[in-house]
Length: 273
Image (cartoon, rainbow, N blue to C red; front, top):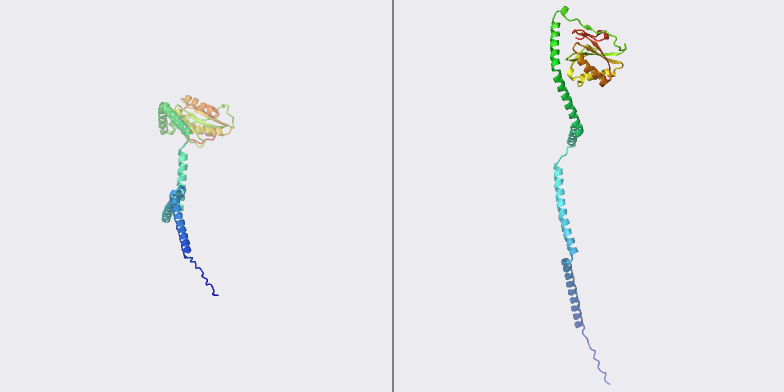
């Protein structure tokens, strides 16, 4: 019996593989297209992303500008040579100017008060000068007469007036200060023999007379003795009143009978030159 011939059917897989490859390729292309589309769409439509990009660009430009400015400053700093001693000198000058400005610039109240006091003092001195003009003329005439007398022979000159204690009530241990008064003014006698002459119109403002009285005030048991020339009563009243009212000093008076020079040697004073 003859064998039945068998026939095997052969199936080719190439069509399926080619279709599968095409599908895979199409999917890849689709994925790439979708990815590119989504990226471009996000870049063009996302506001936050655009702001970040702009901020980054601005920051980069600012950084570049800062770097350029820093480089310029470093270049200038390398050219400048700062002298520390010169800076110290300038600071010292500035401090000195501040001190001078502080000394010159005073509060308005203090400045106004000082100017007002100076004005009052000047007015008082001007008034005193106006009042003392006639007495000064008299004093000039008296001094001229005294000069003529001194130019005479010694036996023709007026004798010196020796001042002695007259029992005016002053204690024996008192320290005496002598002031000669005349119509023209005062003559302050010093123990050294020096005589300081002052005008009658400036008794209350004269610094020398006030210093004379202040020295007497500081001396224990001090008393001021006024030696009155024949025309010195008014001047005495002013001078003694000022000494008593302003300095609370004890005062006394002793009239001088003539025009001769005053001799205070009995009280330890030297003769006037």
